[in-house]
Image 1 (cartoon, rainbow, N blue to C red):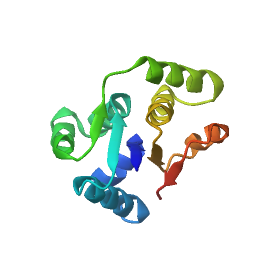
Image 2 (cartoon, one colour; image 1 turned 45 degrees about the horizontal axis):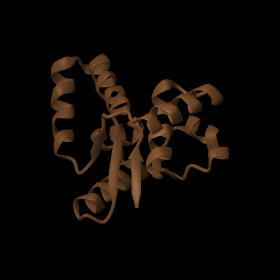
Image 3 (cartoon, rainbow, N blue to C red; image 1 turned 30 degrees about the vertical axis):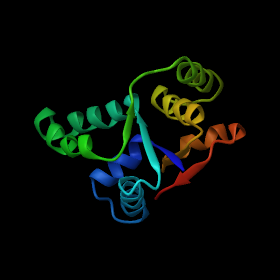
Image 4 (spheres, rainbow, N blue to C red; image 1 turned 45 degrees about the vertical axis):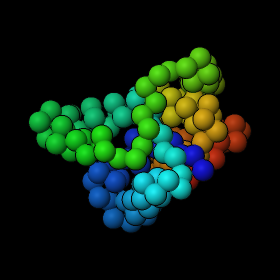
Length: 136
């Protein structure tokens, strides 16, 4: 099984948000570490997490918070293929999504992956039949 993390999924984990968010993301990361599943995250969504921490805490603390992410069993999609850019543009053009959310959807569609999110705006492209694992 393949998953793509939204920014809010990674934030829920990094902030240790109790409830289903932290626990579900922790479970997925453990399963990825064991080789049972594959987790991806678009570089655009990772940038979204990092700049949010920079705005909230400053660069030094943001760097400390983000440091462990480099060792997570998660593949960062930084190569924007033709398929990803076309799917992303299509999602952005058709649905009222932020550019970051469009990258999330475009990446998930391109990888035939399940989106991991708690962002209700992702519900917009249900006509696309993108599978979503909702966390709280």
